[in-house]
Image (cartoon, rainbow, N blue to C red; front, side):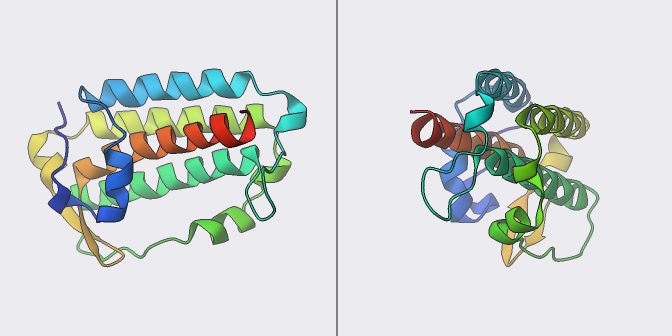
Length: 171
């Protein structure tokens, strides 16, 4: 089982996501969160997919595109650190990625299928890590992160954005 990271294993900004994750097996949590999010997305009517709750905010489609992009970025960081790649990885600007994606023009069902595929890949990757590998670390941006911190960041990040969708887009 992958243990919860200590606060020293990630930038404090990401602590807000990690704190959302309940105690338990993080791989089981990532799996159940996937099912919960897919269930929510299946209830969203087509007219709501492109809704923005305020000017300058992402549509629901873009929120899911952001979750997908973030999952890929954090998955890559976990892989690089697990393999002891000494490269200091750069940060990524989420608004730039969202602007350059075509998520807003893609049907939500297609984005949901892509998210499921990416999450299943994340699960397979983290299942391959033993305790020693999950404790390895590296630099992303200017911060030190452990491999295992990314599993928790991903779960909490998804929970956060699903909550935003429920409250601000569908509430």
